[in-house]
Image 1 (cartoon, rainbow, N blue to C red):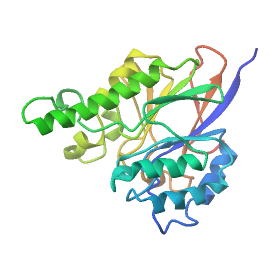
Image 2: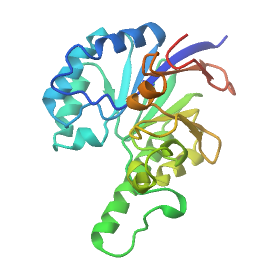
Image 3: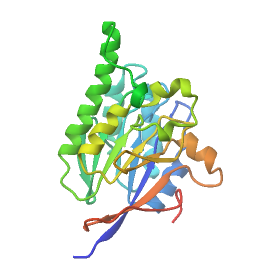
Image 4: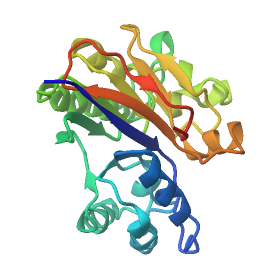
Length: 258
């Protein structure tokens, strides 16, 4: 059986507010024309309020392809993340938190992730109990990602995060905040399981691309970053995945254009 190409669009950090009516519909309509699947890399809302999630759902009426997402830190801001998830899920968007979801021949393994820093600069679990609790949250998110990746059964799989698993794609942010935009603990499960590519958001002034230590492509799809870098193009990223054939690398479109 021959392979087919699946066009996967990704964007994060929509930061939808109560006043975002009409601001995102054209973006979702353009994604529908350019892709077969949309991945949302967290911070769907700006203040974590259910009213913002409802505005986003109204904007999503122009979307004509399946969508899978994760929540971001802004979605947790008001402590109403469960209600936000319910509102978005009721609109037909699959929201992942340590699950693997198969759609259109690929599997998306999704988790919010957490902070903590990278490499030798990563925060260690010692000292005060509150520090140990902080580190344990990063470890727990990494374990969620590992659990999701362990359930992948398709040849092509995408890891969808909000926080970055590598330092490369956050470079451009002030170095002082590197520990707060990602964690190399999230990279560990990406090296233990076969992953085609990774999408994340959160780092609004980071870099567009990087790779893990095992050469897995990592794409920063933060909407502010894409909009600032390519002001003449719609702010989303599209890659092509070959579905049904082993060993094909993803072929990238040019930032939202076919």
